[in-house]
Amino acid sequence: MKVIAFAASNSKQSINKQLVTYAASLLENADVELLDLNDYELPLFSVDIEKEIGQPALAQAFLDKLGHADALVISLAEHNGNYSAAWKNLFDWCTRIEQKVFQKKPTILLSTSPGERGGATVIDIALNSMPRFAADIKGSMSLPSFYDNFDTDNGKVINTEFDKQLHETMHQLIL
Image (cartoon, rainbow, N blue to C red; front, side, top):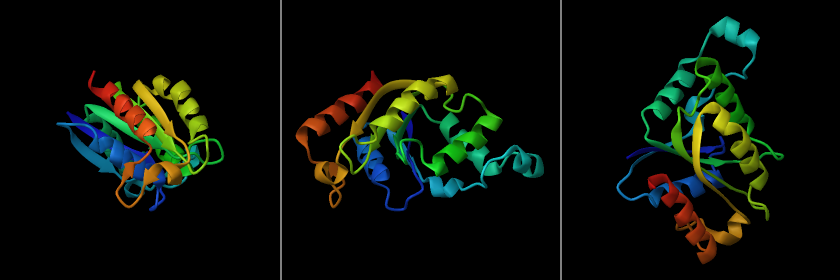
């Protein structure tokens, strides 16, 4: 199974990237490719810029990566209760090429934050909107209080209850 995993953040120190990296490692017998949103940096979307430059090759390249995957694992950074600007911008460009961005791929949605809600608001937004863009959401989980529940030195969830929940969530991809 070919899996594309990424954090919907452009932070080089992204805690969501740490979470998605660990989560993807839980998939046995999977060929996982971790994408970095920094490799898909695009101008701020507007119809004026689109008229000027057309559809950027990087947006097409991102869509092609998703298209060649059997499944997706996305960890959403929450910025002020919503998607990060970097993710929203890439997503907006992609929808101009292919409205069904997620291409009916089985998808796991994750999120974490330093706070007690762990990005639960952005997960709710994604659960409500991503199916309209052809995400076949198989499971979701938000990890609260990242620095209390994740060992950044060893790259894994240390709270046994949350680790079990993450294993169960990731297992939904192979059912």
